[in-house]
Image (cartoon, helix red, strand yellow):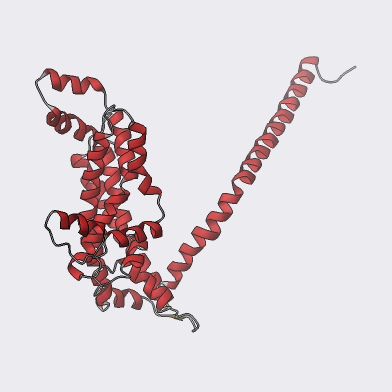
Length: 320
């Protein structure tokens, strides 16, 4: 005869079964989690080896004096002090970069917005037109630079077209006062990404809003001013942020087309960094310059987010 009542035995067996089931669920969950980590392990390993470790190494080198082939020496903040207070070329490169940014960013936004508006109209061959405007954005930087060297040559296409209008074209890439405007003009060639972003935003605006303006007697400018621009402010804000960051990363075109000249008129911050790292082999100083550049970009981005609360309109309320 059993010592435990039948109900108690059933309760014990049910509890044991529940424990076994819990253990099995835990094992299955662990196995799924392990499988997930195995699937993402190539990305994690690549991120650690090629992103996290170089970032940490550059932060370490920023406080060192390391010229390739020589012993590493700890110098503390000396690299940053020399960079900010003694390096005249860095201040000049920063000024050149800001000059480029002031004209490139608004110009890119306005030109891309205008083209996106034109491509938002239903006409025959619209996919072809959209492809034509976007295609230069996927052209390699070196190839694009070589094309524009030919276009901006003293006897190139641009000066030839200006000559037809009776205008004497400047020596674009060899005159200090015209080299930077030439690079700014060339930068509008790659507005395809910004244009696609604006085109997506324009297609998301409800047609009823445009119809309401037409009922009130408004024309195309009223539709643009009171409907399109306010509804597009989140897209404009994003494009401004991305273009500011891109402006501080100009390198390939300046290296290929002018190599920072003439007379350092197109010496950008990233090009100055490259010269110190791979021409002068001052790796520690170049690392310090890179982190100063990160700080500048971060500061400008945070300022834009701060100002955005005053002019960016979100259809479903403010985004914090």
